[in-house]
Length: 263
Image (cartoon, rainbow, N blue to C red; front, top):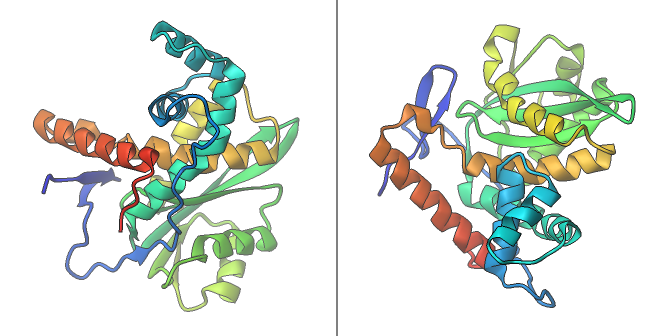
């Protein structure tokens, strides 16, 4: 089996469980992409979706890159492909990853959408895996509870520890939903979650901000799993391990986008 490593804070963690460390099984249901009725084959559609979510490209940029390969489509077609298949691919990638750590880092950042301030809530585990995101207009207890419920949906267990900043909404919501879970509130412990916002910020600038809260939620829900799948922290790996890891990632991507389901 080829080694697979993830980097978070100043440590390397193996992709598989280590003794004494509990994980979480994601309860996502596998749904194969349905290409029925589409003129282009799945290889072209999935390549366009990969280009859009993996790199900071616009739909017109993807249209141009496909044209260079002799594939004539409009940017509107690319948009439809991304909206139709992006979330399906992302869901299957999350399902295949399967296991998550027992320490959750939660954080929120502000998004400006149509002149109004919204909060992007994000949770990652101790290995740097993004667990989920939620765009909301508020940062109060109700908003925190809604995010907790979204995180716990489909999971068989609760985390051992959650780590947040000192926003009071977290503690109030935790008392109602996860009262038995240890809660550490310290900004310095939450670097994992804070760093996980960086790709979103970069993409937000490229897109010149999101058009609506729904647009942000839809895009980021697909962007996170797809982008993370192709960001295995290669700067921490030697060349041979990095190449082997990326080969594995592309093999998984090809299986996901071709409709092959994993047990």
